[in-house]
Image (cartoon, rainbow, N blue to C red; front, side, top):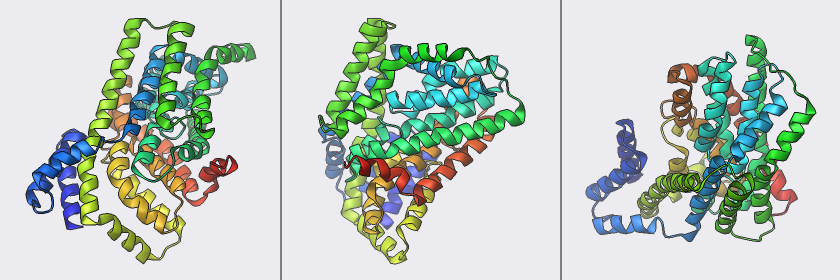
Length: 428
């Protein structure tokens, strides 16, 4: 535990001074190799970096990133935004609700909270500001609702969690559906409360004809999550193959059906997907050293003994894990938590009676909340820049939405049916 504490402390210090995550992790591993050379010779350090990527299933990450960026470039996201506005913009505070609804439907095609915030925010934040919503509030709504992208399939964090633990990605995808939808419902209730309290405006209702037209225009985009989850439930392909098919589907629809992107735009989408994938894969490569250190020092066994010694019911253990990930999420991004921390805690939690699928949803939801909590809060910085508002002001406007997400997290922890109902019904 001393050796692991040393690595984690060095990494946290380097993160606090502003180094990128992958660089902080690499330097922390190198510091361990120097300080504990008999345990980890330098040649082993280099080998762990290579071993970290030695899994063909990691290609799924790149494929799902490609599917999301191609859809965004090809007009799918604009159609989903139009559908959301047609459904709820006429309610008081309608653009706020449309923002959340857009994140719910867009989550089913991107798999990334950052992509959701960038796509939805670029359209909805200016529209909300034109309709006299405070910029900080528009940014807060966008940031909070973008977290839905981590739960509703296809979810890149769920793929990563399944790759680093014994969890099954198909079960995780199904388990994330109800909590993901409830994230939108809880956030909509918070949005309604704020809208009526502040007297936000509503847009005129334009009839069911507009809803029907928007639904027809966005139908092919809405098919994406159905095809992904359906293909995996029926076992027609592996997660990597499903990811590749999703990217091909997005390319065909964008280039030959919607025709709203050029070959140059298509190429830019692929470059963006490659860049986003590289950011994740380099962290995965470097995490090989952390996996090696954890295995060599026996930290997972020590954690298992510690948790079993607590003699607590599984729900309380899961609650403690959720609190721990909430706290860690204030300083670490979800990808880092899922690659470095989740593999350590999962065996111990499962040994204590926690269902691994429910654990995965709790861990990912907790990490998602961290995206809108300072000081790291990546989504806060993205949306505050889009709105031209201060991060502190956006954080203050986010408090009620954060409360809604934390309440949902508590429901997911203490009500297993929210996550396990669909996997059990479909017997996957």
